[in-house]
Length: 245
Image 1: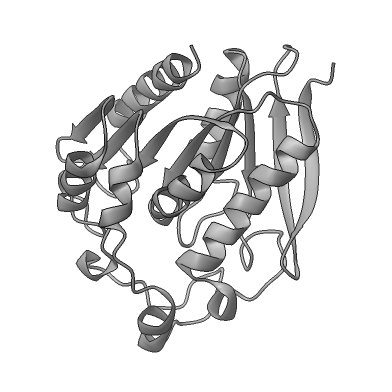
Image 2 (image 1 turned 120 degrees about the horizontal axis):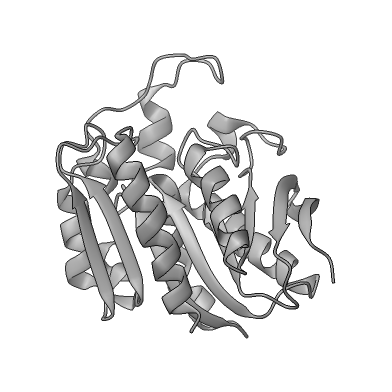
């Protein structure tokens, strides 16, 4: 029985994708796979916290860099779209399950665009030979046109983004796909300055029971409040444990 953290590589179309698989001291544990935000990586705070808390509770966790992000191959501007990230996510799940280190009981985690990715692939995952158990979503957009602060300025990770990048790559409305969700826990800040909280209410309304919506009062997009982070830690682990029982 393997335990601990393992560096993983796999191919998604023509891209080499890199991630880390965290295994608990349990034979064939259930599995959670995470999808990071638009400009995030597998090193995002929520994913690193989950990698520790899930393992402590007997659940495996896989976090990876989507194409064009972090250590994975690709160009952020050329290779980023919801559909491409959905392909990466499905390929990540297929690869980890092929290693036969976990059971086929699967739940998903997504933050911001990662949450949209989870919604977008849910129906496809439900048709695979797995037991799709649930999801935790944070600050997820269902309608990209509602996004209020488009990050076009250059930063230490990438050059400035042209508006055409968002028009060509990131226009989507996946609210109808949210009706396939079940066993979903949704977090969102009511003063989110990037993705309006209306997205959370709309996703929750569409999703099937069981479902839960946690709105953080005065909460921002990054969930910077220590109180909100603590609630995320407690409620997320409790939700995943319930999904796998």
